[in-house]
Image 1 (cartoon, rainbow, N blue to C red):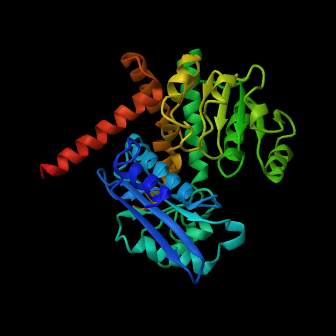
Image 2 (tube, helix red, strand yellow):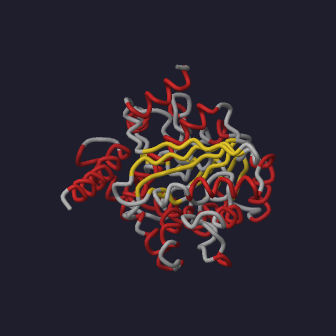
Length: 365
């Protein structure tokens, strides 16, 4: 048994980060598809989560990401009040190099083979047009274009939900939900980040941005010649003097042993999944007096949108649901204070309770 296999199996069967119901390895040599579909839980209903297309350094890294993301979706969907469990898929490779219609159709056939246990959508590296292709082979596909019966770009409501999380954080910490005059740093101004900038500038916040893609930064600066400042990189961003809110909106692991000690922000609230690099980071954040809005709570606007698509999409209905992220975030902060634990642990307790109650109810039917 290789070290890689041992690591994956140990995570699945023995680690606190495991407990997944099903993991599927998918390969279609004709198209070059190599993918992992992870289903963490179906206690609340069919697993729902997006498809990430990313050039992972190793297959082990891809599997680990799928497992972490799927687990996060279970908690996200539970906290969003959705009747869905958690799942996630990753396609291994550079989408700029290998993405093709043939590959996406092959992927759709693998998702379809699960018979509805997993419902897919967009994520990093996949877009509405891609889901339209996947849907040709799989009816359990969301995030499609309006022309094909879908809800379109879910990043719009993802950003709106993060904005509501920021407002709740401001209310909890400063007694006022307004972000006018606040300094907000955003790491990653892609699909979600650029919408978040729009919300913040509309309210009068001062925004600092960074992104590894120069064109993404350029687009923001062109749209907002005032009130937005670009910085060299994330290491610079998290050290901006007087920063009120830090919003990680790129890939996971942004909050780690290197970044937490140097954060200048008083609040962390962003769209990236799995921001906590490892267990215990949430306590380090709290010990520094920084308020952390759990990522899977505040970034749930997108999954609220794609879940609604399964039942006939209505944008205003979804936006109203996403607006409730404000109340949910405040409730988590209150629970954390009552229980004497970090907000991330409080959110986990609430989500786990809902999943446990659903599983118990199913057993008694």
